Amino acid sequence: MSDELNELLNKAISRELQVSIQYMWQHVLAGKLGDLDLKMKLREISIAEMKHAEIIAERLTQLGGTPTTECDPISVGKTVLEIAKNDVEAEDGAIALYPRIIDLARNEGDEITAKIFEKILSEEKEHHAFFSSLLNTR
Ligand SMILES: [Fe+2]
Ligand SMILES: [Fe+2]
Image (cartoon, rainbow, N blue to C red; front, side, top):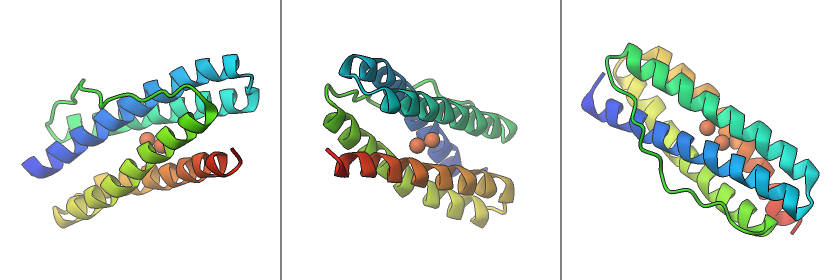
């Protein structure tokens, strides 16, 4: 694993930690906002993001790296519209970063990491579509 891939995997972990907490606190807030469907969906996606953090940290460790505990800045928001905006932005970040990791891993002959990120990226695209749809209905 190159230093660059090591750094990008830790960037990915930092943003997975961020969204895991961000979506879980939005899940808690959504109860107060009275949106129970959104509340349960946020919980489900939060847990998916924590699993992403786990999978990436496991892979980084296998490659000889050390998973970071640094978390990117969390933006919860106060309304459903703010939640939707913050979360579309967060998913945009994943959709920008993960293809770079896939390409770099493949260039280094690391097909396992490339495949892991292809699967995660497809899930991030689903999250992006969900939060975008939320934005369009508010
Ligand atoms: Fe994720
Ligand atoms: Fe996501």
